[in-house]
Amino acid sequence: MTPAQTFCGVDVKALSLQMPWLPQRSNQHSGLKRWYLSTWLVAALVALPVLSVFWLALFPSENIWAHLAETVLPHYISTTLQLLLGTALLSTLIGVSSAALVSLCNFPGRRIFEWALLLPFAMPAYVIAYVYTDLLEFSGPVQGMLRELFGWQTLRDYWFPDIRTLGGAILMLSLVLYPYIYLLARASFLEQSNSLRDASRMLGCSAWQSFFRVSLPIARPAIAVGLSLVCMETLNDFGTVDFFAVKSLSAGIYDTWLNMNNLGGAAQIASMMMIFVVILVTLERISRSRQKQFHGSDRFQALDTLQLQGWQRWAAFATCALPVVCGFALPVAILAGYALDHIDQLWEENFLTYAWHSFSLSVIAAVATIIIALLLAYSKRLHKQRSLQNAVNLSSLGYAMPGAVLAIGVMIPLAAFDNGLDAWMTSTFGISTGLLLSGSTFAIVFAYAVRFLAVSTGAVDSSLSKVTPSMDMAARSLGHTPMQTLLKVHLPLIRGGILTAGLVVFVDCMKELPATLILRPFNYDTLATFVYQYASDEMLEECSLAALLIILVGIVPVIMLSRTITATRGERKAVG
Image (tube, rainbow, N blue to C red; front, side, top):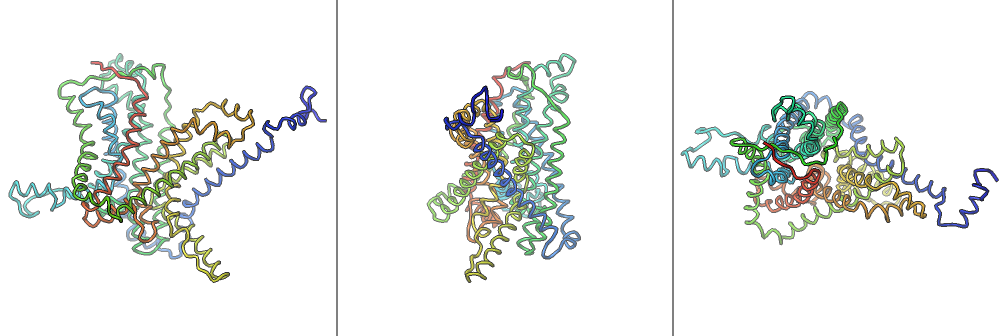
């Protein structure tokens, strides 16, 4: 008997056979290997749409790249850059200023604005675009009131800004995307140490100088993350730019594919959008890598706030109230007024069908992403290899893909599978299978899962990382396999994180428009596509109830996010 088989003269192998409840090494190794391979399989499936886009862009059936480059592509790129720059600047201005005021200052209404500033998060950009167009167009109530008040008759008598322009699109997107920056900037301000600001005040800095020289630079990495999310959501937007006739890359994909009937050209434009995304992600990571901060000893002490006086109090109130009113309260009030006139839609068969489509697709996608997120997060916990970490990072790539790009990437492999299967079945059995995957709701669910997998993986991984490794050791010593450990030990402990992740994915799927619009089967509508179709035809009142329902569903995670952020710091005290 070799020394490896004995311990202190005891036959270890014979002892393990007499004690079958002890975990067997071969079974453990086999189970761990299955988790490892499953993670890489998921990563490969998520990467498949991206690879498909680049493959078709490089080898299209009909190459129109030269034609695109000479005609529409420069305009698409120029418009997209202007849209990104304008939305980024305005969103940063609104998000950082409001986050600083509610986190570091004391003024009337601050407690309400802490959570109210997140409410535009629930408003889809295309919905707010439809509302303001209906409100501000020539036949709308605002211009009608002005004409009646001053006796004007036609547009020649006065000037009024046109909302359906590039500037209007920037304003609409900024009103609903600034919460990304507000959310992360406020969390960063709340995590900062009082001692740093006290030190700057002792060195002669005023309160505002201390903010610009200390607080704002420390929050810069968090602001950069929020800014990158704003830019990626701007790239993803289709409903707003299409309705405002802004020829961005996203609108160009839809036009080239469906109007010009050239999937290869759409894939080539999509590859350009992916280059934009790669640049954004790279810049965001560079900005974070250049700066490191560590929490001070007073991290969990109450945060001192500046008591504003006189006109400053009401200026702060107006600064925080304006984005809430314009980005949420006013659009919701208008939609609610329209919805009351069409409340009977709740019992119409078509409306209930669209609502069921949205609800069922979102639930299926949320459950699918949670299951996959558990697989990825738990595999990373079981394996410490760098290669597995790379696989998990690769699986998060879908969130950076705009919906129109993702739709093309999903359609290409699914259509290839359907066509190959149909050809084989026809030649072998004389039976045509048709479009089994690409022509069904499976394509939509697959796109949802790929796009929002990063959201659920981040939430689940964060919850799982808080479970001490000793729990795993205790479960394994009692003979539990990795799967049994996950089901019996970890799931009950991370239930809250799982529910949060599922809820956020559900709401995101309810609002998703570009991928749904392109991948949906014939005569298949969701609430999002229903709103898009009617509002695009200047029939906002008819779809107001559906739009309001999408917004109300989105309010739930907004409240949860606000409570989570507020809980990171204790009650604050005001200082003069």
